Amino acid sequence: MTLADLPFGPERQALIDLDAIRHNVRRMAGIAAPAKVMAVVKADAYGHGMIPVAKAALEAGAAWLGVALLSEALTLRAAGISAPVLAWLHTPSSDFGAGLAAGIDLGVSGWELDFIVAAAREQQRPARVHLKIDTGLGRNGSTAEQWDSLVGAAMEYQDQGLLRVVGLFSHLAVADEPHRGETDLQLQRFREAVAVAEDAGVDVEVRHLANTPGILSRPDTHFDMVRAGLGIYGLSPFSGQNSADLGLRPAMTVKTRVAQCKDVPAGQGVSYGLNYRTPAASTLALIPLGYADGIPRVATGGPVRIAGITYPVVGRIAMDQMVVDLGPGASVADGASVLGAEAVVFGPGDDGGPTADDWAAAAGTINYEIVTRISGRVPRVYLHERAT
Ligand SMILES: *Cc1c(COP(=O)(O)O)cnc(C)c1O
Image 1 (tube, rainbow, N blue to C red):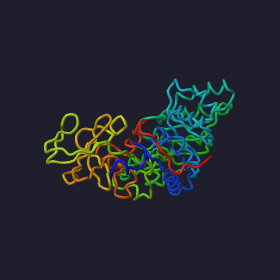
Image 2: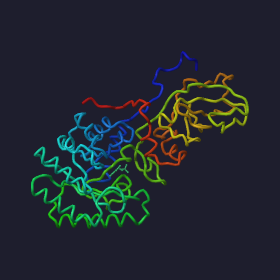
Image 3: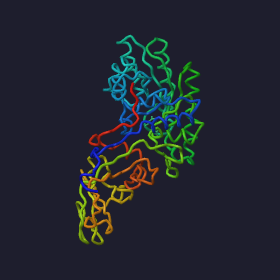
Image 4: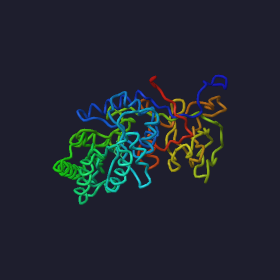
């Protein structure tokens, strides 16, 4: 390839296939039916872009949207999205008044109730709340001991017209390891908490417990609605099964172009620390993505696909760049320079190319983190966006 032959295209991009998102939402909805699907689009839709993903998920039949932060929920509303939205992670500084005014459903673990009621009084508008019980995860949610009084207080406020208890929910801790017994215990505690609430007169629209691993492995956790995050991005939460095994399509492809290609002698050190030295005379390709782009610095050995061949990253991953060793056969002197060639860091993997799962393995983390941490320096490019 000569420079003149190079196709025009972005230097680096995260390509987001919205048809894959739609496919995955339909797949998760099919598994969860008759339960409804809440598409979890927190953290900028796990790095995929919150607004386009939220719209695609709603187009494909998601009934609700879920986010962690009120600020994320307000961003959805500011984009004109009017579907039900639940936000569940608050601090005493959260702007409950703005959430109320925007018609956001609010998760309540305890202390939030009085703050929300104060906002409801001020606006003379009832809040919509989902009461959360901690059934074992040890994070958000009321303890079992506090549950009675939380339900009681919420029902008093409901009787005063200050709020409506719309949902009851909890979150699973180990559903990605389906053999573990703790999920049974969580399920049992959730059922007990629902029974306590129903005895107190709570009559909810939605009881919800399942995340992606729960949706895929535990039909008994589906209740009225499921909260699907990872699965709608096409990724598997299980170590023994990949996306294809689950009928899912990874929606994000991160790629760039080779920034330099050069022949080096045996013993050439590569990147900070010189932790890698070429075992023989070889050719190095420079990949212009690094930890500032969200590639984990610890992930040396992660795969990059160039011209149909997958190579491991050698040496340290730097802020802006990383290096692959093309091996002795790829000599620039032979006219095989890959300067400007497309370099795929991860994608759907259907062509045998690298995946977010591969990078998770290289970094000692989970695929959730790989896609979520791709930074704003990598422009998102949307495929199959529909005009609205
Ligand atoms: C992030 C989150 C989810 C989504 O989990 P996935 O495993 O990505 O499906 C569901 N519920 C809560 C409370 C969450 O924080």
